[in-house]
Image (cartoon, rainbow, N blue to C red; front, top):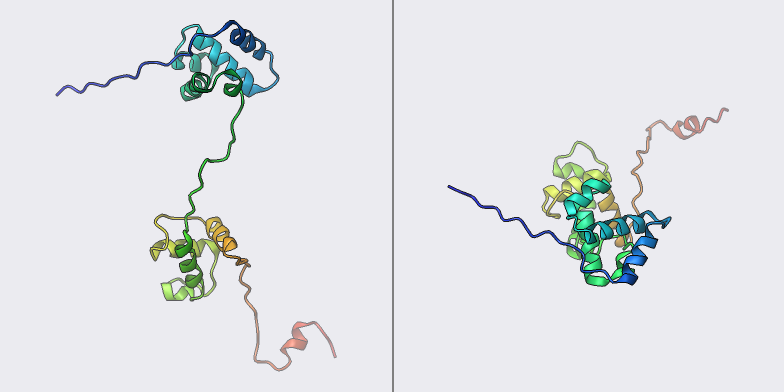
Length: 179
């Protein structure tokens, strides 16, 4: 059996105008590392180097070179030299509104009901049980549980174990008062 793999054609920048070439050459003196790197990539692509050759010579990932070339070809020079947001375009919440309410209900029950060896919830334990009970589709972190509860207006405070004693003098003795 013969398996054929087809390589994608390498991408290159479209032909540069004289003004674009001068701007890119001026960008080589930029104090901004992002602008400098993008200018290096675009000039190298204009010389006929493919993304792998550019990445090897500049010490970056080939996808970085491809991203720069695509940005230039699609948006033009000024936009291709602007760094985009580092924040994700979309945020997928681990708990939709129904799942968040199920989490709230879960926390109103004792962990021992779910065969856990403690009577106090922790964020990580709530995350573990929410997965085991099918509230979430995948494992989540305690921080995800905290953020979900915050969206519901619930503040998470660490559980406190209160020590008490049947001794009628316990409060006086614990308080350190001497009579």
